[in-house]
Image (tube, rainbow, N blue to C red; front, side, top):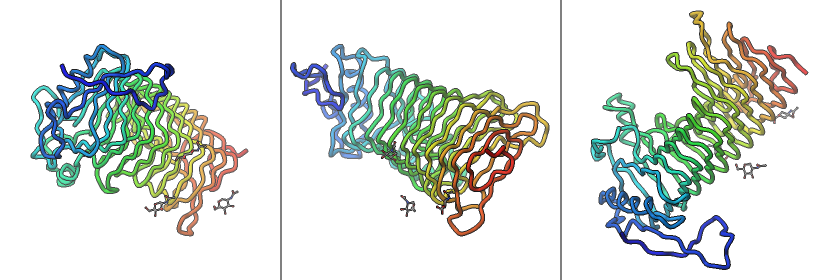
Amino acid sequence: MKFQFVSFVMFVVVAAAASPYTSPSFNVLDYGAVGNGKNDETRAFMDAWKDTCSEVHDNPTLLIPKGKTFMLQPMWFQGPCNSATIYIKIEGTIIAPNNIKAWKWPNNIDRLTWIRFIEISGLVVYGGGLIDGKGASWWDCYSNTKCESENPTALHFHACENLILRQLTHINSPRNHISLNACHGSHISELHIIAPNESPNTDGIDIAESSNIIIENSKIETGDDCIAINHGSSSIDIVGIFCGPGHGISVGSLGRNGAQESVEKIYVRNCTFNGTTNGARIKTWIGGQGYARKVTFEDIIVIEANNPVIIDQEYNPYDSVYAVKVSDVTFRNIRGTSISKHAIQLHCDEALSCTNIILEGINITSSIGEEVHASCKNVNGICTSCIPYVPCLFQE
Ligand SMILES: *[C@@H]1O[C@H](CO)[C@@H](O)[C@H](O)[C@H]1NC(C)=O
Ligand SMILES: *[C@@H]1O[C@H](CO)[C@@H](O)[C@H](O)[C@H]1NC(C)=O
Ligand SMILES: *[C@@H]1O[C@H](CO)[C@@H](O)[C@H](O)[C@H]1NC(C)=O
């Protein structure tokens, strides 16, 4: 086992500053990585990770140094690790193989993700570096419906406790850039996520089966949802996100193919949607079960958004017995412009309806000098000071 001790310089202020503390650091270059952007560095990363994860001293760091580019094949960072907190400091660049043919899938891993982090508690991924999923050839095969399997997610975090992810740039994922599943207590901040407007399914951040997640102060410009909050999510705070181009911030979709799926306690505040196809959206499918409740969108600026405020509890033409229940939703202080006429759409199921839907301080005007309007079906709630006027809600 080889490692070197470096001074512990972290964004976390160390309380015991008087006694300089050093923590073990494992540099991938010491494990045979070259960093020329061509070599397959997967082995070196795995070996360095193994030592980092099994380190018995506190706060070990896996270091990916700056000024170098490391090409990685699909791989897993597997926990649990010995230290309660473990750092992956990405100062350099990590890239995927250049095109689909160059991707090598190990036998023991599925084809759903490029880089996966599993069962690691107290993981801190940071460092100012860049992660490039080289998605272009995947987008091509998707648009020609020639892909052999689903396009992979770039980074997937599974079963993580207290994840911190910050100060990184993520570009051109084959599919979603970051996904969290079964993560509890995460703080994601200062990310910049970029993919072309027309790239398919390139969500910024997807969350499912997770709770107590904060996502803040990030800029997300991609081809699909900036953030999607999916089944099994609760207590999710999203603050200070600049979104666009993209599809906005979406709760759901929930209940596809008859699934029972629920989310609650979602709070989206101080976000800007610029040129997005949706803004603040809740989307459910007919035939599903479960609920979306206690959802608040507050202090939102929309700039030329297509569907700035939208609840789409898909209209049910077949009298299916089931739908996902939508209730206790607040849209407060939403201002700006819509590029379509549909500034506000609240479309709910006839049998179930959406209940306690509160709109307060809405002012959405047309970016192209047209009339904009609100449309609704089967909604119960209150509207206080809404432009455009929302005919179906009780006006205060
Ligand atoms: C709102 O978000 C922006 C980043 O988009 C941030 O700079 C600003 O401090 C936030 N303001 C408040 C009041 O949270
Ligand atoms: C919104 O997007 C447009 C087009 O990309 C850009 O020109 C404009 O500067 C953006 N607005 C803001 C406030 O960032
Ligand atoms: C609504 O927004 C428009 C355009 O920004 C503005 O002219 C108007 O005064 C606003 N109305 C209210 C009631 O704030």
